Image 1: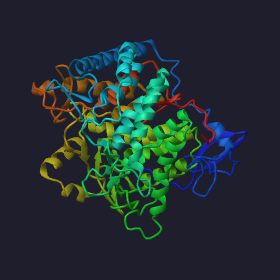
Image 2: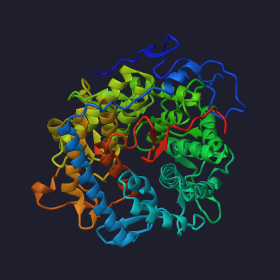
Image 3: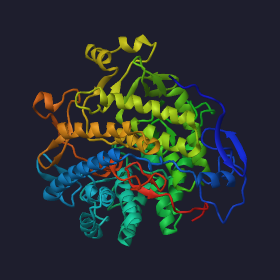
Image 4: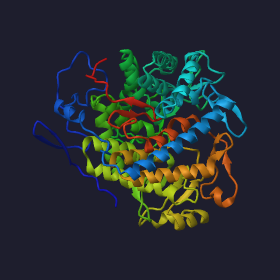
Length: 558
């Protein structure tokens, strides 16, 4: 059922015999003495720092389920599945090595390399932590030697997409360094971050979407415009924070936090702003020269997803010191729960677009990150109410895969809200038929090997120990095997409503992005790997599934 927003939540954070009752993601901050000069974001909007008692509790709280009583049968099944996923990765990696080793991507069907991310080896670098997690150390060290030769000052004849460069290259290099401790990865991480810094050389310090590496000139993806989106301005926090920690250079963190400061200073739902009207539900469209939102549509899917993800996860990465992030996440998740979620006429919970006060029942596959991230944060702070919201959203997201003959989910769907018949009347006949049959209609019916639902199923399995979530991941993997596996690798499938085992032929989409190796395969494997491999109590994953250690103490200064 649809959850009702509550004004006060009991979260049960106990320290020194105290019981606190406050917002869903932590008690109100208290004034604490600064140690040196506190970095940006360490104070709440009214100048408070994190409460020391709360910090002590949060830093010792575990989120991963205790699997010590796992049955021998479950363990045997799980390990057999891990081995099968690993063989699938090795099959795909062999195709990449054969036709495109060191290139950004492999065109599996044409059997040739593709330059899509400046020729720096996006698949190679994105997949480093997957190689490490799967104990493919020979392949890891072989890749390391290519990374050492990468020159991030040469652009491959392409403009660099700043957001993608940070999440794929910088994130991959930082994670490879943290796991291997090989300094070449930190050196290269610093090089690629520095190569992106000219994009922030703007009047407000907000980044251009695209960057000419040679000239240092930035631009929007739309020529002649200064438009961008929420995800592309707000998804630097984790990587830049960790780089500042590792280099003891706070510049990177300050650059990322300045974006949040400007966004808040230039936009307020209380100053008559016609675009930003619901506190914490930030519109997708943004102008990086004025610092203002340029549209009303707010959404937690594509174009905005990782902004919200990083509010919460960077708070975790900061050893819970980033008080402003906690405060903003709390506001956002409350508004999300109140305005951006609806129950379908088939009883599932989905998120949708919010345009002012109007809700649109449309959801893309990117929103499937929400249950995992929300569940993780809810476990950390002890909010049963919001953990249940995560569980309910995951049921809705999984239904989109489970109802399909292919066991794979469409890129985007439409649904009909409970007791809102006009949603149904506006649909075309094909969509109405699918609503009646499945409970939703496939808006974009292809599957491009995306990881988000697998990611959230992995989180839920690791946090609850319930094997139904692992079984669901296995079912999706079988769907990938049937519908996406081709000679020398894997590609997308054009219509998830058709299964190759029934049709007798693959209906392929020629797409094998680096995230398939970095995210999809990693979350598939970790679901079945031994539970101490990248434990949720020790690591926090970036939006590109690059694990960064939670074991680096932080006092608010660099």
